[in-house]
Amino acid sequence: MSTRSRIFIGIFVVYLAAIGVLLYRVAADFDPRYRESAEESLVDTANLLATLLERRTYDGVIPTDELERTLAELTRRPVYARIFDIEKTRIDLHVYVTDRDGTVLFDSKGRDVGANYLDWRDVSRTLEGAYGARTTVVVPNDPNSAVMYVGAPIRERTAANPTGDIVGMVGVGKPIASIRPFIVNAREKLLLVGVISTAGFALLMVFATVWLVRPFGFVRDVWRTLARDPGSIGSFGRRLVHALRTAFADMRDALAGRSYVDQYVQTLTHELKSPLAAIRGAAELLREPMPEKARARFAGNIEEQVERAQTLIDRLLELSGLERRAALDKSEPVSLVQAAYAARDELATLAAQKEIEIAITADANATVHGDAFLLQRAAANLLANAIDFAPRFSKIDIAVRALKKHVELTVRDRGPGLPEYARDRVFEKFFSLARPDSGRKSTGLGLALVKEVAALHGGAAKLANHPDGGAVATLTLPRPKST
Image 1 (cartoon, rainbow, N blue to C red):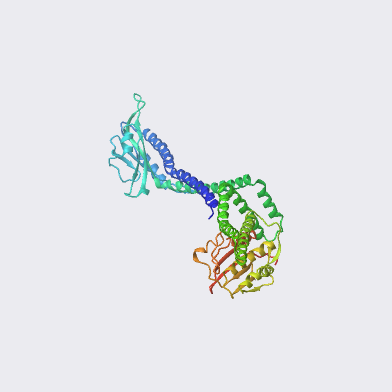
Image 2: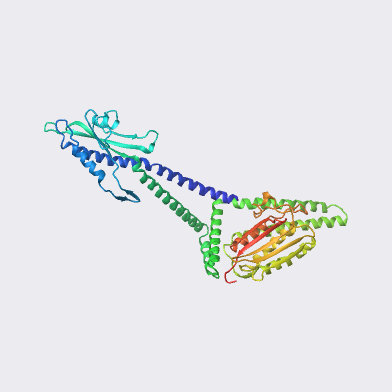
């Protein structure tokens, strides 16, 4: 992965991490906020029940028979409510009443009548005239069994004492489990909204940055994609995606700043050191008297190294130009069979030097839409790479096949094959393997160029080992429906 890609991904990861932390903090705050809301409702309910009990309280005696009948009927009452996405079909309340000493006079569950609740915080504080509340786990070590209780005082008011004395309390409890579905539902909605908002903001950020980096270039690329021959919907979609990919690359490069340029300059400088050093050494030796045969050899070395440097620069400029293209300037039917034969004719001399046979098998209707020159350059680069690694007196097979949706051009050599460590790097810029014959490396730009040409045409390129030995390079391109 290039430095510019790592920089951009780093920025985006930091953004996602910040959004993730924010969503986590908000989601974690749901539980206490919902409990506070539920507690507030319990306060209302407890005070309502306390007021009803006060109406019949006399001489310190709290009658609970009416409350008992009401709650019994409430449990039998059909209940249905749909609160957002949560359905409610029953009443989840636990009600008890105590006297001024904390002794239970009534329990809606009918289990603790006569027991003393004075040790419970909600009971003791309410009887003291303070606000009393508690959360108690009913089943030990099971937090899901927790119940929240709130107390309200029962006062006996007289004409002489309008405020009234506390003669008991009523406690109202609600299981925490009954509000948990609302918490889960809210968290799911928060996650959904968060994902949609994050994706939307990221997309908006990409488009805004692309517009700032190249405001008219992106529009021009999209217009060029629309104006070209329509072809199939799939090919149109691939061209549009490629336009977006190029705009994204420009944005990424802008965010990466000068590091992208530095990477190219450093690599180019490193690659030019070897030929420049050879040229300098040969030039120094040519100043000295020497036999004509040796002079011719050193002059040939200079020419060879100059050609090597020129090839590196030309390839780099060619690749850089391809990386900046979002769409093909022109698209026309191209026969990959003709591209294969043109590549063979171009490299016939190089193959003859190693006495290598080049055999071509092809389907006549192997036609794609694209740039004929670029496709021929891609085929020539694949063949040149195969010739570099093919042994002397061996054979290279070129096959062009027209499949249902794709056209494949494969080039197979009988060389040593692809080392395991190089399989994921062969299409990287400036990566090259030593040639078996000379031990030298190439510019490392040929296969990178093939990859860019394939992407520009909506296809793909790969290099793998053949089961019977050697390596096989494959250029896959979409096949127009009209062919």
